[in-house]
Image 1 (spheres, helix red, strand yellow):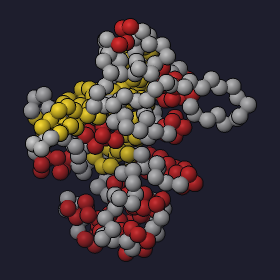
Image 2 (cartoon, rainbow, N blue to C red):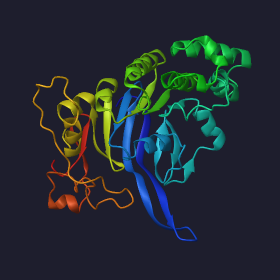
Image 3 (tube, rainbow, N blue to C red):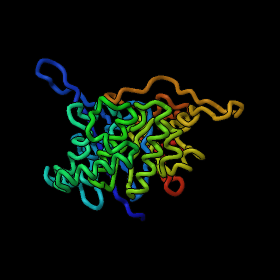
Image 4 (cartoon, rainbow, N blue to C red):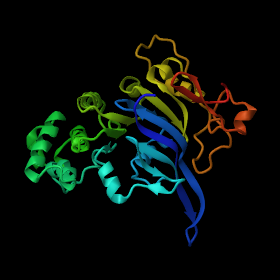
Length: 327
């Protein structure tokens, strides 16, 4: 077994549905529904799926930014929480743990406080954790900004003075300020112009190597995760349908949903033959997911057992896991 920095077991995050004058609970939106996976130290793990499948909620729940409904998360050999055992780190312990676990948010406009200067944004964590005094923190901030492709003079400016790509670089510098071991990138290039996306991705790749980071990279862009990630988990309606190495998933996709996603990727050469798999129907509501396999309402290979029984997750080849009754 390789050195695992993160282990997620049976993670669940449900949002209650309330109705009426007295806000009585009438159901749950099952945003994340019983997922388990691990990330090895130094690895980039990709999380992909359609919008609304629970990718971002997974990332935020792992970091305890959202209250988990069930399951456990272990980071660097230490449990952050275990809902079933009613265990969680104290507020003070979690604050210390956050030094090693940081996040790059999707929206570079909403994630930076417009009232704070860039210097204050990047140094906030360093000063709060008392890693440096104010002068040392400012010098460190200048160094990080330059590493992220911005001039040191940027520390005196405010977020509104920068473009979207530059703001995301500020967000990246902030995430590195505490010298973390693990970073979650929540669709960090989705809100950027196409011309800027490649620059930010290259920057992230260089910084991950330079700082010896482990990364959970959340994205809906399959072309990006293929070349950026070591292993990939495919989510559908809050659950994993397939997990494997990048090579496994793109050269030998086994789940019908993964096959459909990959068939939608535009070919680099128009003359290449491609069989497009068109899925019928809409994604079911996470408030009322289908019985049995959640994908059976759209699956072209659906069988009777799919409508009744949740498929087991099977390891069909080394490090290639699939949840499907076809196998």
